[in-house]
Amino acid sequence: MNDALLGLFYVLAGARAFFYAIKEEVFVIIIKNATLIEEGTGNFIRRDLRIEQGLFTAISEDEIDDNQTSGETDVVIDALGRHVFPGFIDLHVHLREPGYTHKETIFTGTKACAKGGYTTVFCMPNTQPALDTAKVLNDLQRIIKKEACIHVIPVGAITKGIAGHELTDHKALIDAGAGALSDDGKTTMNSDFMIAAFENSKALNIPVMTHSEDHEVTKTYKETLFPTEAESDIVIRDIELCKRYGGHLHVSHVSSKASVDAIREAKKMGLHVTCEVAPHHFALSDANINPMSPLSKVNPPIRSEHDRLAILEAIADGTIDAIATDHAPHEMESKQGSFSDSSFGISGIETAFTIAYKVLVMGKIISLKRLIEMLTVNPAKIGGLSDRGKLQVGMKADLTVIDLNEVQIISSDRFISKGKNTPFNGFEGLGTVVMTLCEGNVVYKKEGQ
Ligand code: DOR
Ligand code: ZN
Image (cartoon, rainbow, N blue to C red):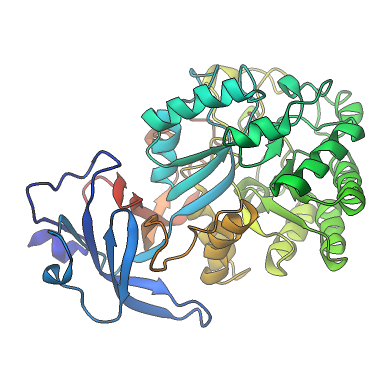
């Protein structure tokens, strides 16, 4: 078969086989010749995997053939020459529903996530209306059920309208499926509200995800980039509150040396503090792009090379736990005017892996094993998801198949996301997602595969 020579092929082995299946459909899928990373050693190992009813039911050194399955085998995927990793988990995306469907929808956003290798994402509450009541969350859950091709976990707002003036009902939000609390897009400036968030974090066992920006300072910085202290002062405040009131502080999109230094110290003290970094903050700085160009405008801003090097160090020493994209799709019209008029944000879900592999692994900052941990098991742990993030029998069959040798020149023309706003056009990445499965369903397949 020609496709086999290309390294990856499908054999449809039953009348029921249909790739874009209804989620509930029972399927038996066999993935042959996958290269996996062995837990513990980090060695590359070759395995066959069997998936039934959306779960891994076998991961075997020996060949699994079609006859060994309990039911009819629907799909056989030959992953020869490709790496199979657990589906990536992103703790920080903006999917824009409800309210900003001209920027992104659950449908387009999750398709873009699948193309990026992601199978679970946490979507931020700065929507219209904000994700601040059980009713808004219930309505969103209905859209997710109907439109999402991967798992979407909404993040509930700490304050009404993320405006910082009135608390939401945190318990009601968690009961309606919120997986974390955040006012992302803004900082909760009122410390009393943050104390309530930490107390509920402790009581309900969910993380408080913080956007760190002292608005008293940044409101005076419309035409230029705000200083790093405006971020780190809030990080330091939140570490102090977490220390006093307990709970889990997860610092979103860290961008500065002062912030990672504070987080490193907090971890040394044994506090439940974790953090994430976005690819644009470890790949870009004022040394390689103009942070004042509208396409590079993001919050927190692209920083100095000094800060970027400190971020790389914090990735290498484990201070930074996870990579999160802060996928922030915007219509191009809002990115074409002057710097002060343009929107903050980078559409990043489709480019994260190829940038991270090139900069962090090829750049010898961390091993591939650790990169995959930062994209899978670590965010699973932070998000309290014990049923995913690993390739293990009994876990959700969420995975991504990647060709690590394929060079990828980033071009936003090829994005599935409605947001084409990226400063990475022309960037030469390494590694391409060729297929993504969520609970055993193929949710993305690269053209020509
Ligand atoms: O650049 C950003 N864009 N930072 C944020 O905190 C919010 C996000 C958005 O919603 O566009
Ligand atoms: Zn943010």
